[in-house]
Amino acid sequence: MLLRLTTIVFALLFFGCEKPPEDERFYFISGSTSDEIDIFVNGNPTNAGNALTLFLVDGQNSIELRGDHRAGGYHLQVFRGKSIFDADSQKVVEKQREASEEPEDELISFEAEVDDKWAWQEAESLGAMSTEDQKAIYSIYDSICNEMKGDGFDPKDLLSRGDVILWRKSNEHGSKLKQQLEEIGAKIPPRSELVFQNAAHDELRLISGKQIAMLTCNQDKLVYLGPPEDDKPSESGEIKWTFYYGFSEMFFAKFNGSWKLMLPNL
Image (tube, rainbow, N blue to C red):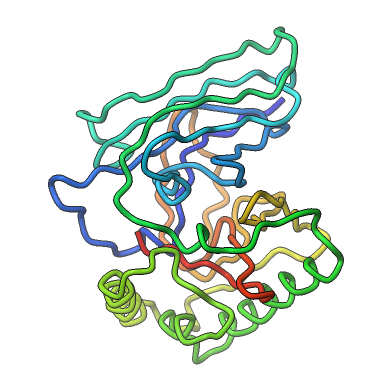
C-alpha cells in the first residue's frame, strides 16, 4: 500500500503569507498514514500540515484515525512550532501502529493553546449527508471553479462571495487576508502562461464530520491554477515546492441552513 506524507498545507493560506510573530506557534501533523485512513480532529475531517491549528480549540483536543490500519499501519506526530521546518518545535503527540496489528479506530487526546475562536464552532451540527447537502456543496465547488478558470479571475474576488466565510472571524485577519490576496493577484503570471485544472464530480469524495464537511479527491489537487506541472517523479525523500493558487481540499460548514466554503486566514 502506498503511503502518503501528511504534511499538506492549504495553498491558498500559505502562498505569500508573512512570517508569524516570534511568539506565535502553530500545530501541525507529520508522519505517514495509508490511503485507507482518514484523520478527524475534534470530530471533523481534516488534512494535515499547519492547518491542524484551524481545527483545534483551547484546552482538550482529540485526533481520531478511522480506517483499516492493516493497510500499511501509520506513524503520527503532532508538533507545535513556527512551521513544519522549525528545529525548535515541540513534540506534543507521537503514536505508531504497525501494519500487522489488529485494526481499530484510534482516539488520541492532547492539550493545546489556541487563542482564536473559529467560524466552524458556530456552525450547525451535521448529521448524515443528504443528497440536497451534496448538491449544495457541489454547486459552490462548480461555481468557484468556473470563476477561477475565467480570464478575469482575481483571488480577492472570492472574499465578496455570499457563499464564502472566513475561518478566523476577526476583522484584523480578514483585512490581512484581503491584502495578501491582492499581492498574490498582482504577482500571478499572465493567464496565457497558466493552466486551470479541477477534479470531475466522479473523482470527488465528501467526508462529513460534526460541523465540517471536507471535499477532496483521488489526486493531489482539487483545484489548480498555476504553471504547467512538472511530471518528473520525485526522488525518495525529496521535497518539491509547487507554487499555485487553488485547493488541495475544500472545507464547508452550514450556517442558518446555508452551506458556505470556509477560507483559511490563519
